[in-house]
Length: 229
Image (tube, rainbow, N blue to C red; front, side, top):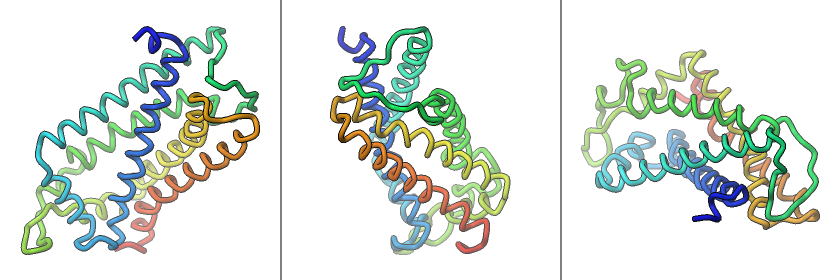
């Protein structure tokens, strides 16, 4: 326990929780991409499958993800305050790197992402934004004669609004900035990089962040321009 009270211990725990959330972002994107029809029944079937899981699994997963978010945010704020107060930033492997816009504004992109997550939860999870199009209020036929929530209709209705689409596309740009630095700094924090490998890791992290940005932004943008109907 004493280790995780130290600056390097907190940084390692922040890095681990951050990568757990990156993994969730990847899995979530795969589920969202079912709207393009690769899964039988599309996104409605995907949503129905998730909601059919036992309640303890759903609740446990959400509580675990919430714990990751809280730990990541709290340690991120603490370390930012310490670093700006003059304490040297500690890594398991030290490497001289040029500061970038993304690296210098991690705290602010993190704050904006937190605000977006709350908006997204209110919009699609709790369905209190535009309740008239809420999936749970508009049931449609699904596979095997099951009646399922019309998630597809809710998503299409939301992203036909240019304001909502711009919010989501802008949030994904912020996600790209946050992850483009966060992914590569994870390897440095864990001591899994060196001066020779760091440039490759930095490029790979940027490409991974770009892939997530393009994947997530594709849904609202293709709906807005009526490619996806």
